[in-house]
Image 1 (cartoon, rainbow, N blue to C red):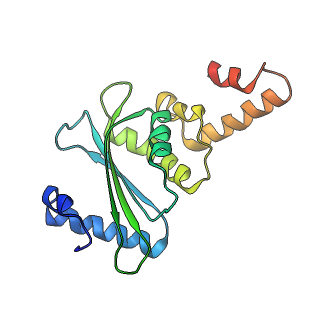
Image 2 (cartoon, helix red, strand yellow):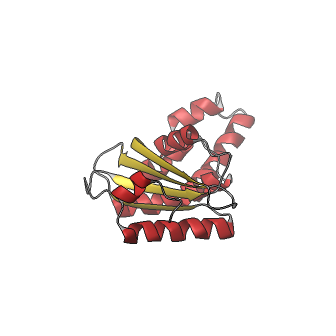
Length: 171
């Protein structure tokens, strides 16, 4: 807890801070990033707070914001807290205030559709491209989009479509 910055301590109650520390400890132990999406108490139904708990030294916030945009989430505010606990690996808590680009934020639907895709993106097992917009817009799962991505690649390769770009734009 002493590793938390004073500004963080001023903005978060002890219960929330304890939960965040537990999540960061879990990340340190497992090496696997964790995500959650919750209603923004300042604007419920309009905004959500997406939290990423990670230990990735190569994390690039701009890439994450771009990926969220491809998933239909607009980022309005970002808070990143970097921690260096003792002589352990650095940890970070990134909080992004997000909204649905297409209307009111349906938190349950957004979490169900986007969190699995975000986990895959974070792990590097899902391609980060424009087709991911079909996850929230068409209600497809990340697996369905990945299968569609393979079909688009095949169609472009065998000349059934003028180009991969044209096929993606049509979708």
